[in-house]
Length: 114
Image (cartoon, rainbow, N blue to C red):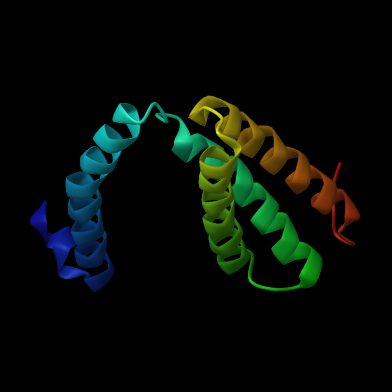
């Protein structure tokens, strides 16, 4: 059973799982207290826009997804801060804007799909 840990990639996977298992609850508690429990889902929708942008520009879709997701999270905080709105409204804009942007850019891509 433990011979699977002889592989270096399995050791790194175990280390990553332990680190995520330790840090994710702390982040989750923080987001629940701020009433933004579904923030990860919203950022996932924005990541679709980043992947589509990567396909459209020919760049690495993973890196464009990371950049666009970070920008989406910053934009959501700016909407909440300067717009004086509740987190729910900014999160809804992040959800549906991210999904719509991703679908639009995928359809514009030369290898796009319907």
